[in-house]
Image 1 (spheres, helix red, strand yellow):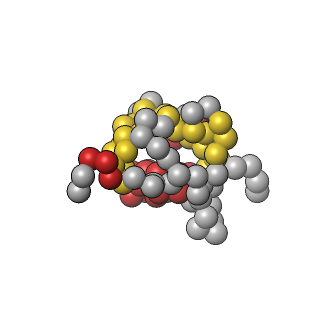
Image 2 (cartoon, one colour; image 1 turned 135 degrees about the vertical axis):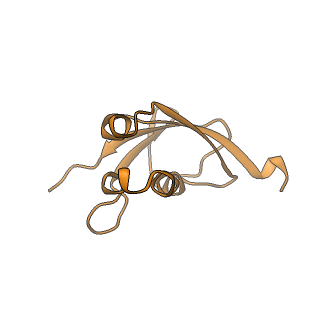
Length: 94
């Protein structure tokens, strides 16, 4: 795979994720065209049961909000090389 097929992003954890994992930031190399949804799934895959209850709601949907380069973003937004992703925390509700 050519290096053009990959992007490097920085994920800044806040709130409960930061406290639970004791990590402030994570650098990821992801395939070009990756979305925030894929970042959330990767976090869940790498850290498992420690954070799965935070990332996913009871309905199995991703329960976090994100900002990319200081702008609130959708789970299906495509990331670019050098993106700075901030996990804002859980979406409110019951």
